[in-house]
Image (cartoon, rainbow, N blue to C red; front, side, top):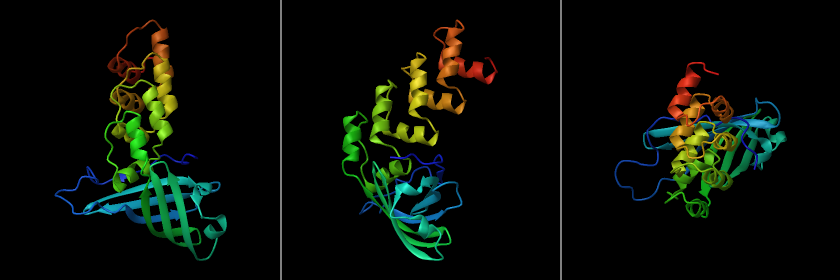
Length: 233
């Protein structure tokens, strides 16, 4: 599966979308509105998906390869006005879009159908009990959390990594290569918080390896951050 052309730009306007106050007779529907435009380079569109639950709302926007939007063609993007029905498949489930495109600008509604085996596969990898309602799985789908990514994160030896950490890694642009380089530099036992902190400070495995090759051994994450932030190379 192709990765999005841009990193996820999620705007979260509430502390949690999944936990609403009070008991609910039925789980919230995983559906909302979408918009797109093709003012991007190459065969791609900028796709925005919005979801509302009560007073909570989020919006996610990312560049998507046209080839990943099954059922949407370049001819439709260039048409004066045309109906559009297409789908975006992710490991946690599939987004089904329906609406209208006018001169490369589209809008409409979507619904998300979760993959019933996704949560079970994550639990088999050791991620603990997974909330497998449609909305929770949709939150993982917009971040394009895959089984392959989740499996390799586990294999890289992070401490107490959970499914919420996978979401944080995606939001902070943490790739498998980034974690792998840290492990190769002798930091295989990092916590998810350590990984996020190093990423946010612009510290990668190559910097850590150079610090150690300079004669500093058993350097803590706090010390690495201080060295980097004070311009020590």
